[in-house]
Length: 82
Image (cartoon, rainbow, N blue to C red):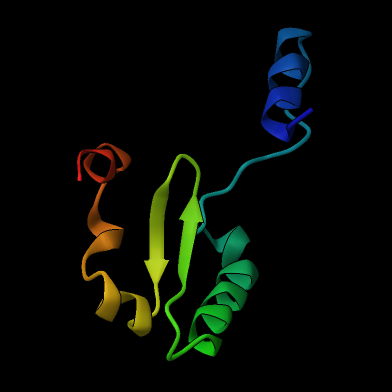
């Protein structure tokens, strides 16, 4: 069972969430953020994206931006309409 669903069940039973969620840019996620940036840079000159479900492009390296400029600025709905 996915962790967010476990948190929902715990809340329904009156317990606090056991698996807190943090945004990628938050202080708690800083070590993960540094690693993701290093992976994107390590793939240069090949294109690489950081993608979150549902089909949301969060970040791209320069190779990816050269191939599809502005892709990270589009919403999933805009991508479907393309």
